[in-house]
Image (tube, rainbow, N blue to C red; front, side, top):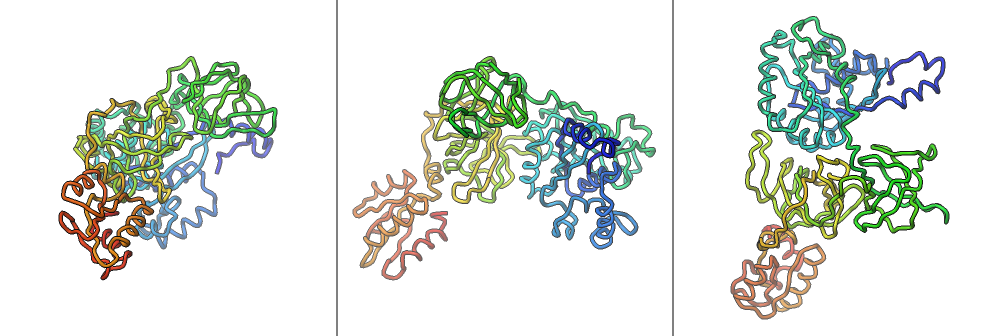
Length: 540
């Protein structure tokens, strides 16, 4: 529901134009389980009169059945916890989005889950936000998830943090408690890149310092939460210095028009500017900046526009148009990045994935995990893999040169997602740190070779009347499923070891010496042999 205005009844077109021009602030709520994130959003909407009457009536009815606030009180968390499982357990599972506006600004709220197992959902919700509200239960202070979410907010480059110390009513509105939590939080985040941090004591359940200033905490001289959201300055958060335009689509409706469509990721482009297309390096000038409403003199983030150029140069989807008067972007096939892993199946070096950087998709892999970051202590630990919700510093290699910037310089051209090539699902997200020294001096390990093919190097004996034929059929079945194997009709210990050193599966015909497993094809059909390799974790 939008902020009410007299223009609605007198001049609806003027009202819509006014609403369209309002600045948009995206923010999320995060923190530990049961810190009151959903309740806070419900209180923001309720006290600012942004809830329709039928919505409020439905929540009142549901509070009797699913509420956790006790008899006679509305459970405002039900406004955003809409899944049945969320209401049954009294927790947030998925990211819930809500939209509202005030007289000065439009808002998109992302309510993210607090459970550790849903950290990936929190990272997804935070990826597009300008501000994070980190809730802390005043009874328990800074918790593990408080640290985890603060680190992820820092990692994702969120510039503004509001630490809302909630449930102050349960600690007697103690100023001493508030100051102790504030000190603990600042001590933990001293090494994080958090530039604008504000602390507000609140009670989301009762509305203290949410929309209206609380009379229960006269010692707090700051502004309530809603005022802080209205007044925070975000206009300068974008990079307006380095012009970046990832090409999403080449628009060719007729012989007389060829435009390059996309969203400005950083910087300012003006009509007549000289530009360069990367990675080709071809240059031209901007002839026109076309939008639905007509041509414009300039374009800046996050405008979606179409460029036409003075020269006919080859530009395709995935290319990057950069301004010539700005800092040069990097073109390389290897880079360093921090990765948030989001899948139950661990990330292992050497395994091939699809990486999507801006509008460019390319195959690649993690060639090395330098360390895993302990989000509780910010310490670095050696790691051979990244498990679900873990964060690591990695080197990635891609199969074709890509154009990028460091994430801290440009989010749009410094971030990427990792896609599983078989399921086409997103399994990780990365923030580019920069280029890396070439690692040609580091030999390829057996583990890296095996990870590339999703298997463990092994020698398998296939015996039986039709052992040779079965071995070749098994080689085909393994190959068709993305593994790498070879048939050894005549083998010795040295050859078997060479095959295993290459990370391959050697299928030895009628020979068991030096083999790790043996199968009789007269007793087991090929499908049973294949499934047995899975059971023994030789392939996965």
